[in-house]
Image (cartoon, rainbow, N blue to C red; front, side, top):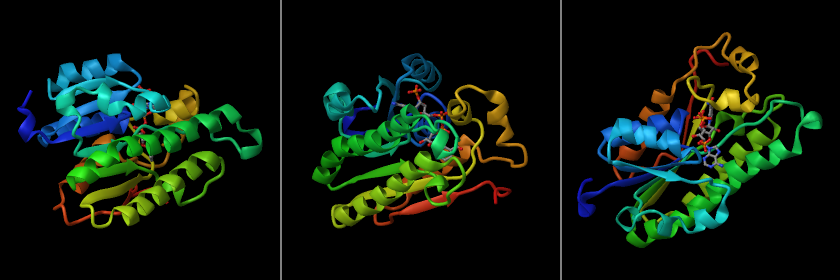
Length: 246
Ligand code: NDP
């Protein structure tokens, strides 16, 4: 592991698959030490085997608000000074009309996409403000902007992410802390659709029938670019779509 004084430290939530995994891979290639957080620690340990000791696996459920509040005590002291927080952990559950939706699914999305992301930010932000440097990149979605049937609570959680990001920016102006919201469209190569349809791969695959989706590496490239811009430049919102998605 690189010496503490020269470290650029990133914390990526939802690092065990999809975008999060690709973002960890890319940030390590860019010279970061990455704390990779998710519930499936075995996946994170495999990722460490692949990427080496500059990845630190952290078992974390972002809905566990006590652990989130104590996150700076849970991670090793020499990694606790976070430069870059990627709030990526999130999920969609169900694509049913509101009148048929499961309340449990709705609550899980709110707890993860809204409350988890908010509390992670609350835990990490004071350290960034104190050192007058840092960047929070939230993974939102175009679903927060463009309504579609069945998008009900998922879309609403991502609209929250968009507005929270902009409001944070307003509060943080003058602190040198940056906040960005990366909003992808339809993306393949992740577990998102399988999770959404509770493992029904036929329904999940149907989503991609006529569209060549963007891929996790495209998201990682975008996140790395947003993070690497000069510190006086803040990308507020960036939307990226498959070329074929209407
Ligand atoms: P994946 O399902 O592949 O990845 C989701 C990640 O979130 C997993 O690593 C999962 O890890 C983690 N996660 C879920 N719940 C929790 C939790 N409670 N605590 C900690 N980690 C959690 O999906 P994607 O990579 O596609 O999605 C990543 C983000 O991108 C999400 O926020 C999603 O809403 C957003 N997005 C996805 C799009 C797509 O088309 N794929 C489009 C637009 C936005 P584990 O289960 O191990 O905890």
